[in-house]
Length: 527
Image (cartoon, rainbow, N blue to C red; front, side, top):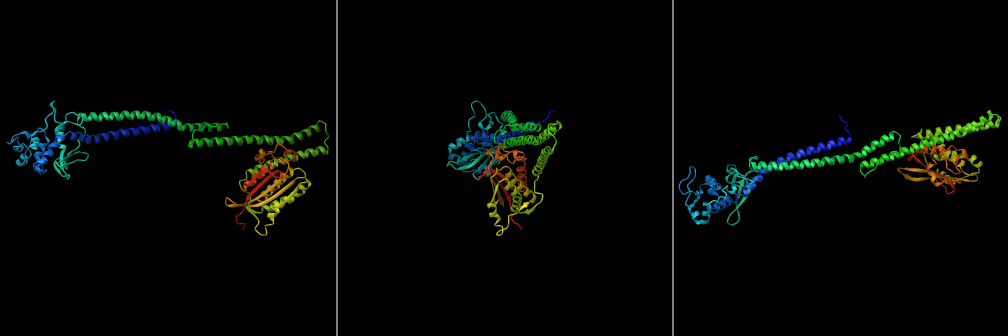
């Protein structure tokens, strides 16, 4: 059994649905034709009986109503049959036929008949038969062939203006009606004809077969067109799905450059765009991972190469193993230890989804403690510290509660130390470090504490600012590894700040160096 793909399943489902619709359409068409053919035939049959309508209208005028026809049921048979005994003399006719008067109308009063000679002649003489000898129009079927009168006249009836039965068969649902009018133009009754029961004549059967054949051929042509359309639609709708499956297999095999074509703006097109975005992110993550591993290898290779050179020089007798050589080796080992520690801290900070200790802490106090511990080193490097903007907010503490954040005091203290260390290492001697803090209005339901650190030259090019928080990344100019950094301090700070629900951004400082902006959400209720 062949494998049923999604394309084949969709095509088979659409084809089955269309076949079922065709069968239902054919069945209802046949039923509708069978039910509608009877009333249609009755309409045609009654339209050809205008001679009977004229005879009944003349009878109503001569007798002054329908009472004579109501009281003499046999008169209805004589009036409705063109070949009846209306031409007989006044003597008794065949058995069961009433005698006719001198006007030739059975049961008609002589005074009414004598009063209207024209009507008397019309009642005495039925319409002449056709020249070819065929029966009168009322005896023909709907399609023109001869119809048996025994099948036609038992379905014929007459009702008065109040829809009361005068003679013949009572009106049936779906029957045909022919209005009868008097000399004054008012309706005096209706000639009714019930539809035939079933399809009996060959003409009716031929008519039904012809129309059903037309319906069948039309349905088959529509089915063929619908199958072609369903195949095209299935291919059109499922082509993006197949493309997505192929692209997913490519991504699973490591081909991160795989992309799928996007057509239109429907849901499948949006899915294709989402897939392409995911592939681009995976490709970017993989590129970052490769670059990060290369940077780590490069960072580790530098001190290891220096240590190897020192050791080989001692082994070859080029340099004696003295205190200076030991100091140089010790410095390289300490650099390796610092690099490994920073790498581990960076990975731990990146994997931290929330602070380890969820307690209220005073961020300004932590910043002042970190600044106090760094002041001697900043002074030794010749960097002045301006805390005017920080002291202005700190001075407001007696008047209003100190700003509090929920988090880990040790981690936040590490953030402030790393930021101050970054300014210390990458600011020229004689420079300036400016610290400021302020409270921002509530955003997203919570107030914000903003802390800014601005240092003087050298600065960071604008195109490199978005990357300074990446691990092991350094600017290409003056902020490089010659200052002793591992390139992981800012990455660690960003990971910790994000874990506290805050933000950490970098921009160009008006002092000519780098501006670091830290924002942390404050507690609404310090208590």
